[in-house]
Length: 564
Image (cartoon, rainbow, N blue to C red; front, side):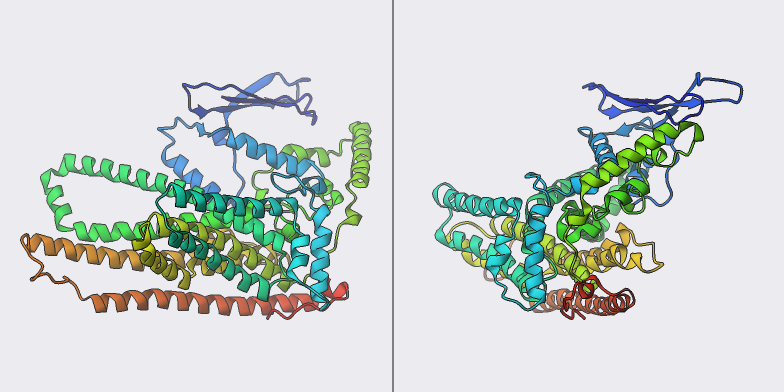
């Protein structure tokens, strides 16, 4: 259980909070009580304690997509859960600790890499130097990009080559694979790297660093795919359990007539199930994994997405609400209350806090930070490139799974099938295009909102276009597959005894293939046109903002490449 209490004396802001966590194996939930002091006009000390359940605490208006989703689930199950908060390995406590640390620590102390904890300033200058050489048309090579890599990116590259070599060796020695399978595995990675070379190396090398591309790709490959598979499995099993429960409840009242109705309409129900699987399992889960995988990485090139671009003075005066707006609904009142305590009887404490602020500002050393040389359009292109990198990493891991485990067979007889699956998944870059579509509203939220009155871009608006593309693409393939299997079922029912001489395909294979190809190509073309139009007008809008406010790149004396 989680127990917290707050004690106040004479209405003063003299707050003490403590949290006591007790692990009880027999109770898989967490109940939080908040003890709130109630002071009256006649009482000199707070002696009345009111117990309230945290679940009923007033919530800030406008929670994010995931908060609203979880609230909806808990509201549906509030009776069964006894209005308790479910927790898994104290995730809520860790998240709250991270939010408090972000508000209380100077931003520069939080600008560190994952795992290695290398400060950003140790390699941000090298990244900026490479960008400066590119923008001034000086000599620029891939070696310079490699020299500017952080320790984490170097470890990622080293780990990739070591693990790839071990996997290939294991496949050859113990897995029953041939050299052809190893070549297909290499082609799977080469295809993904080729997409990154085109997107990053040719068009956006000055917008986003190679260091960031490597980290985003690794997140998509290592984190997004396992998380997506686990969540999809949970959703599918929960859906199956719900349908079986609904079936037995309805059958209890309707009797055998309900079984007859299911048999009559089972093809229609099968089709509806595939549509739900396409949109609400595959598309929704994978697009959210890509979005949060992108947000998972904090990098010097994209500090404006995290709130870590604040100075120490901004962090102290704003309390994180304005600069770190994606936690504005759940930020602690305690840290902001300390900033705005104007009680004239507490001037000594105020002077102490002011001295701490000044000392903190001197230690933070914001003046030695590297300036951002990019225009707003280049920052927007950096968002798009980073999201595509996450998507390519996810697609690469998916290709490995589908080619070797969910598609083709091992051995020399299956190499042709493996190559066909890889080719089909390569010529339709659904994940990359859907990530680019997500970036449109990401740019609106984190760049255009700073200069316009549009303040209503949330996670739902960001992922919705990508879900429509991804879901429609999968729905076409699943519907075609459902139709083919349904036709074969009818064929087997009508012709229980057949031989090879009388065998015939129970559907028009030419027409089915034409419809399938026309559908998926049409979806890709329409989505690409939508992205191209939106991106074009967005770049024009950012260009007008640059002309009004004068971009950072022009103030630094560099000519930024034209991205429109």
